[in-house]
Length: 114
Image 1 (cartoon, rainbow, N blue to C red):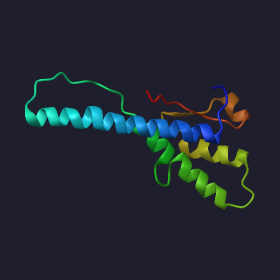
Image 2: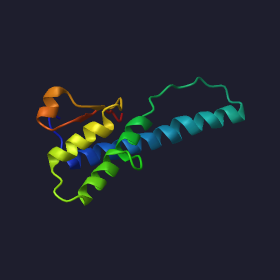
Image 3: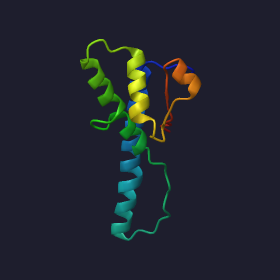
Image 4: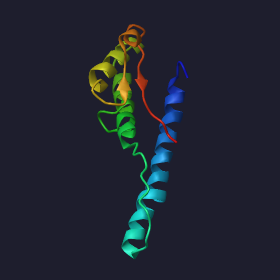
């Protein structure tokens, strides 16, 4: 998508959380069980998306917590919210905001639940 809304962020977050659950139960726990039981198997490598989940939902520092915090303040605007995100999330590997995006007060979260 060229432009996403808050609703799409929620959908993407849900997909990432579901992917994390799938990975945990199908790959991580199953492979641990194989090791405990001494079953011969070949390790299956899979991407871990915990970092994108942390960016979105981590207590006190995630996008949702920051949004909640800003909603309490009087006279908060979309522009102020984006600037707050830039200041708090800019160093996160999955958060990006190019100069052109910053002019338009937008940002990107790089993710892939798949």
